Image (tube, rainbow, N blue to C red):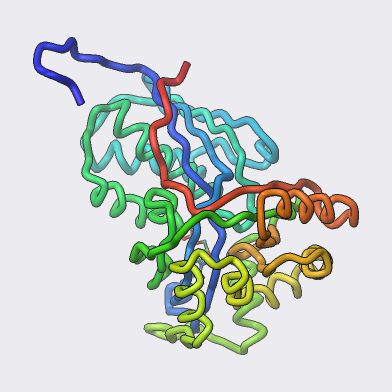
Length: 318
Ligand code: C5P
């Protein structure tokens, strides 16, 4: 906050970090006419980050670095570019921006890395262009970009309904430790939802069908409030797991390896293919990651903690 008489500080470079997520529970209903599926999900933001460096420029350009960056489209289809354009249009800004993405979240991995880029870009451009939007305005713009973008903005723990974009923050105590088995070859989210429909014989309906609520959801919310990793591990669930495994049968291996290695719970992250294993401690997370590597069931492993904050300015871009 600037104090009276302080020089106005302007910046031509802003660096923002936004987290990836794991769905602790993902219940999926029947598809709506627009193809989207009503969801009931519990998101946890984890300490695997995307970084966006936004630099003042005359036009809109994008570069990317980090694991899997070569798979990221650098044209107008990129969610970060769409986020910058959406903010510029909304706020009547005519300036450009150069966006540089530093990928930390697996590309097409089911951890919402592209959504984190979009959320980080909204925050970065808002700061760079001095548009000063309220968080609610940024959240509304985020929802137009993709179902997971509002959560990347919000972070921490939240229940998602609708397409996953209607969020209610949830209580969670303490820190949970994770190991992730990452695959080089991603899975397409629409393909996994399509396989889910095929497995259940679902056809799109005008207003879709709500997912079935289960008692495990109550257990899950209790586990979060109590900070109880054993109970959380028992309550992890993903309706998309059978569909993802049907598309990529090799995924049954990291799921089995994590269970055999003593994970408190194992779940496919979102639409996969990343497999998330809940650990007792940071040391146990490293042991689970080592088991993934030793058994050759991951192209890359990550460890992380959650929950963590949503998209935040971390520093000037230098
Ligand atoms: O919103 P987003 O672009 O992230 O969604 C990608 C795709 O995932 C959608 O086009 C749709 O096929 C599928 N999806 C879905 N139901 C949701 C969220 C995503 O069917 N609730």
